[in-house]
Image (cartoon, rainbow, N blue to C red; front, side):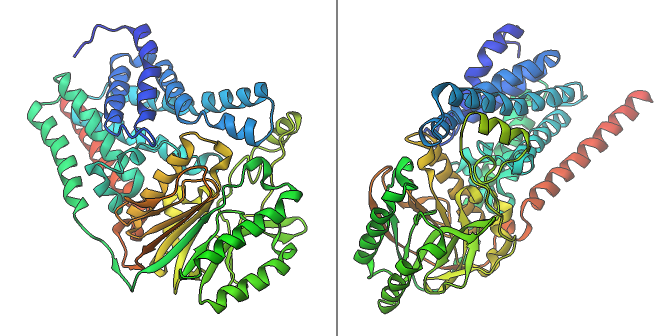
Length: 499
């Protein structure tokens, strides 16, 4: 397959293909577009291996330029930076993350010289996922946005999530897309290419029909309060009384629920500063037999946490473990601190909580609590999931305005429900507040930027999916197995050629 395009054509098309990549994610949900985008990427790297780095970087600019432009809103609208500084930071972020597709392209181009199509497609898929794993889990505490698996929540490939999580699912997606290119280039026998693609997608559909977990009790009626407090008002001292009274008044309307939940740092004050407010509210909740989960900063002196607690058991606090770089702590010190001081953007300096903590209990069952983007790390969500009946994410996406980010974050939460076979309750300040079923589907959701109380019921669940037992290790072992086969086949091919 030769499309008659030269390197310059590819450089021009690459950002458009990258934009198509981002359109596969929420709220656009053009899920199958990512297959076309991956096909272009693979073809470009194989067709122009000497120029793969530049094409990959151009592709990355399209991916992240459309996919994470909302960084501008967080820095300018919520962070208070001037337009030029916010634009500069956004451009730097997009330019930095575009390096990852460029690195992927360079490594993938190396596989183009391998002797057989099966070797090339497996090697390329492993390369793609290795770079996603590097970006999503390790670098700068992990930035797992726009991992290809998240685009497949509503496709047959979602059936692999309870087995292998996002990295295994993504590997199989890349494998199927690259196989089509090799087949169209007549390097892979048509019957084999069709067999690979059909096997991957059909097996995914079949796995969708499987239920890995089961109910552990009766439904729990839950009300989630979406306060819709503007980010520029949230921490103003004169706003605190209004905020507390708002949440209190709305909560008192839902004493018929078994559990009421407030979003991340709904209380704009430290725990020790609002005991006079929380104590009578806790007593009122107990009189009605209702658990009330709230979120606020806790601690004193130089050590403080982003925390959550059930007022029914105020001595058990969950402290956020996986902190947000450049939001809750500053990596790359002292350089990052100097730059942010220069443009006068104030950021927090939180202390991470322990990796293993006593689970909060609410609605009669223990639960996994995640705060902010902690739910983007599946391997961490499952640490204690065997002891938990459902998942809870408390977040505040008001930083990102009316952009794609709140919907992208919701999509990530859907994946965590799917991986663990448990309901996920999302409590957000401005949206998207939602109830998510164990199959990853949205059961109900509140409108964005609206004062709203969303009430629904969930089932406590028990049992473990394979992913909940293995974590990301399952996907890594699967790719290692395929990698071993590739190495063995490559060595055998070289041996045959020499003899």
